[in-house]
Image (cartoon, rainbow, N blue to C red; front, side, top):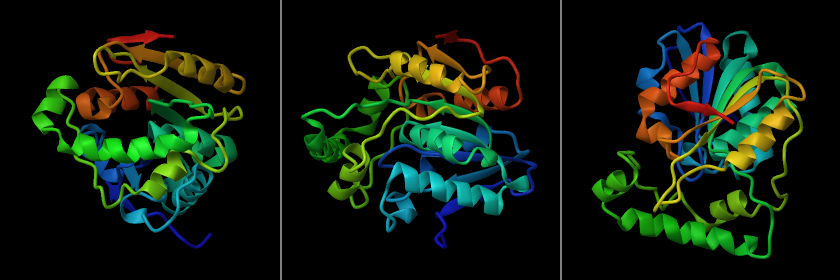
Length: 260
């Protein structure tokens, strides 16, 4: 594979490589609030997933994204391996990466992974996702921030959020399935705050995923945080960064997490 994902690099002299994988319909810029709170000793690689941001010209699939990130790590990470942070769609990519290319993964911290079994309405979901991105952009940012407990949710670039990309993500030709077991030690977080705005993650999916992960690594665990919403990397970026550091450095997690 000759193509390389567009990516930015931070703390190039750092001795510990960390890859941050963003979610759907955004780009690596979505990590801008988290990056300042991560240790300067971390060499950060922040790609734009295929179909997203400056990697828009490459069609998206979970498989291609994981293979291209594996190549990115082998090319740019010290010793050809990295810790992985994945949010939402990025969490799915992270687990696929750990299953198919375990040699490039040290440990994993993911949040917001959701599994959506194929149903009769699946073909229509991309249209809803495409439309909702435009409706959300019409809402005042202060209103969204208030409703999301202070989360700083940027507007989606509607030029990049195409209907074709929504189809590739939400209704892929090859439906997303539960992953094969993977050997990397993994922290799985399900944001626990929902309410009027349904922004909590599925604890059931987190528990199912931890059962799979523990087949090859008994240190894999799942937690929830009842004050955090799905995009808590935008709601509490310092906490998100501290959680990542605690997991990678084998320290105690910050207060507020409840084991599932």
